Length: 295
Image (cartoon, rainbow, N blue to C red; front, side, top):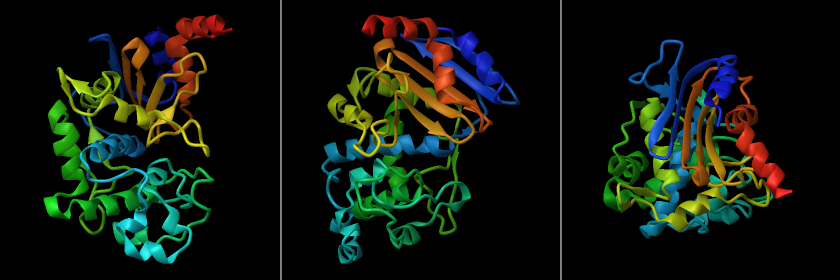
């Protein structure tokens, strides 16, 4: 592993923070551009990954089923042949048929997200965007009414509080709700905790927060995009198939390699940053060696 080489690449593309943790200890840490251990950073679409994990936990809790249709909760969706076939899983995999959009400042409130017109038949096309996560949020909000919780409160109680993860702040939409596809501001060391939960198979200090088998389902791609699971990107490196990561605009990333007990948090501010280039620089010789052995 070569964190210095990877950091040299990241520094050429607006590096603001990098923390490398492996096998129980931090092995590399660097900050730049006014950031330090205490300053929260916007995750942008890196926020999405919280909801894939929460969704499988909610299924374990009996709150929802990933393969249930949105229309089971939102009756209006039964009136459209395509919408009637959209499942919660397809929303999180971005294969629901909803078109591009709903990113950044354009995230719609739940009501507007539910009124979206599908652009493609559900299941056949991967389209990146934020609207599917807002539709998922609308469904989850309905299911949480009896508990008097919002989706973000449920996330905090079910996942974040048990691992001591503190969100610095959340963005708010025009109606006062908080978005699901973006909006979390967090320090590098706090996001690291989420990665540690994932690399441990859903366990935290000998307590199972998310069932390991359930968590693994977050890291399975779809037929439409084998490299995207439930709000997580899957490995671009054939030699490291168990690598998964959360990704946000500008080069935000949380990389997890379970077989190496490795978690990397990276913050930045450049559209030119490439995950694959960084990962090849980071994993370098080990990745190349595995590739040769596989032959």
